[in-house]
Image (cartoon, rainbow, N blue to C red; front, side, top):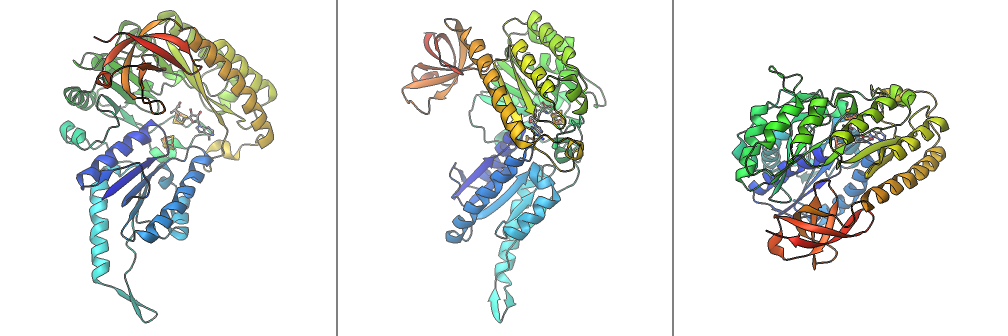
Length: 463
Ligand code: SAH
Ligand code: SF4
Ligand code: F3S
């Protein structure tokens, strides 16, 4: 019996998928990437309209697969299921779906699966009469909670046993859930609930258990890690948590996502600067280069504050690689505002940027703002911005050519099996010749040739 878990969203979504896959494994399923499986879970995202469209495309295929595999289970979970309209649409138009749950009751997944199988058995044993014929009723479990409950902690060992990580030596750890920022374009606070931090004790215990399981690199996850710990009974800062994580034996690299510019403290910059275990990469979404747009986005920082912050970070950690997220076409964005964004990109020397076309999310304040920008204007600005972003990426990456740096070897290159792929502390990938035995190890490589977004390299030291 095979199971497939498809992730549509961000790293937090992917982390949830690991938990789901682990639980399915404990039911005896073998995990596969092939959607034509006995149990398929769509872990949805709703941050932009195209994330929603994607689900419906997949559901079409799943329905076909189910015609030939009647016992197949089709489950949908994740952020999109927190929207009642979407759930209604699925129930009505995709009646073959078996299980629907949301972001707040993921920890109940095992119980929900058991409940579904019991209901199926019951329905099989109790067929109902329809048009004079006996029919087995379709078993549907739909359980979505509108709000989150206080965090339910499991024993770290159980948690790790039930996780299905992609790589044995890298792991993501949630340090908080939800978001309180209510950026006016964003749906996340509505579908993920209020910000809740896990206690440092629970986080550190989990990371210690991961380290003894062979994990070397940790990614700390939160929608805004910089506000971590503020709502705990004993408040702690993210900087001090990060410092504690670095002290754990066996953990060699620590990453974190995402940093909100309004809350990035000097203390954090100091901890990163002093701790070589903290990766030399910071993702610092700016969203717009115009102070006026930022104000309407409710980002609570100005263009000047952001640029000042970048200066401060670079002064303290010169080798840091900075990436960002940008939205084009937020309601009311003028050509002047857009040029502010373009110029900010030029000044910030980003090594990478995710650019998004503004997508109207119903229920968010921006959806009802006046002056929605026409689609063709958004498209045009988007293309112009992409050009500037690509130029920045290329020139920042090329600066590293010829350097000798450490990678953590992640595996065999998918396109060219003769090559291995490793990741630099600054998050860039390097492909190089080497033996499979290096996978999971730290290796020094020379960055021989810049290929734009990655490097071709050669091993200089693999001890
Ligand atoms: N918590 C993170 C972002 C999570 S969503 C942060 O604050 O940085 C990831 C990215 O999606 C955001 O940074 C933003 O650039 C983009 N995004 C969110 N809502 C969007 C919308 N309605 N339209 C277009 N892009 C959006
Ligand atoms: Fe969305 Fe803003 Fe929260 Fe990020 S900080 S998840 S963009 S509301
Ligand atoms: Fe998407 Fe939910 Fe993440 S809406 S971006 S999967 S928090």
